[in-house]
Image (cartoon, rainbow, N blue to C red; front, side, top):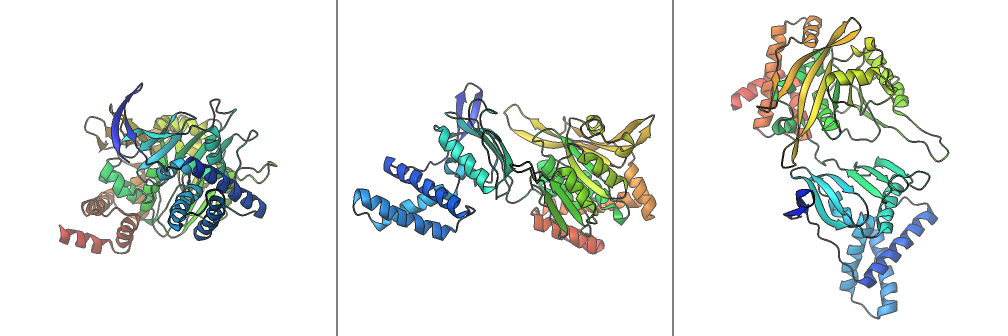
Length: 479
């Protein structure tokens, strides 16, 4: 990929240039026939199309020898070897966008139709326009069909929307007419192979070391009160990434159950059950909703229930669980803390206001755009639910992002959660503030030493749980 600035009707947009696989007209015909033969084989044998690559490579070579020698006479082994590998990559991959799928620096791939450039969202450069253009509607439709078959879904006139997860965890959403009037569209949200950790979020400025240490103590709860939280924000504000990073702060002893529409969370703990919803089949049977899975999780002795996105009646089930002693996390689309409460207590979630007090924190996250089009994420506010007064849920803002300094500041409001942890654990508030300071020291040490991988962060946190004083002494010796 190379970077160049180009002018278009929307202004200055960086370009993402992709090396394109080139075929002769004859080779294009062979590729098309090869795809048809393999699809027919899969249909007739009922095979899932995750074929053995070595076997498929041999099948391609045999096909080439029979096909090309029949029309062109003798051919060299070198040519067959080279062409076989090119065709293999095209067949087992995703055609023109295969290299985009494998680029870990890309966050989103967006195909908006025929004869229009494919756009990508780069983790560093923001929105970019590629040199890839689908000129044939059938090619794009075939690509969507391939993805649908891989996840055992279908997309056709009766079901013109495809929503699911690829084998690598990427989320896909595709539409075809009549839903998308201008032709097929495809959006792929990719997730880093090396997930972002709490240390990455500190380095990016998404969260401060002080706030991370505060959350660490509250979510751990010293074994007496594990705090609950809803992470709220707009689309692509980084809610799931932040939720995933914060789960590392959960005590390793907890049994965690995650419930998602599409599996995204990658929690580093050992004792985790991951559950995923399922749409109904063609006979409108077999559907498993978020609410079904939340109800089922209560029969599995969870210490903490994590709902990927709270949207409908599963909210009541979740809050019932939180009000009966379980701990939980979830994400929700909202613009501020008060709106989060409003959304939870109105249809379709309809959580009774009296149950909202089971939540300790509402964590607001925003995606902030710079004039050059590049964006960054920030936890903009942490509000604590402190109770009910005259039928209204009361909130206290305890941390707030300052746009002038780009710092997340403690607004020095006493935390109800810390007070409860102190009371239940027999510690004073000063003891808890000292412990937050110690944990801040541990987190800052990982920042300084560039300990940011999932395994590295988890190893340090687990060592701290086992012997905090030993870890602190070691950090002080290394200063």
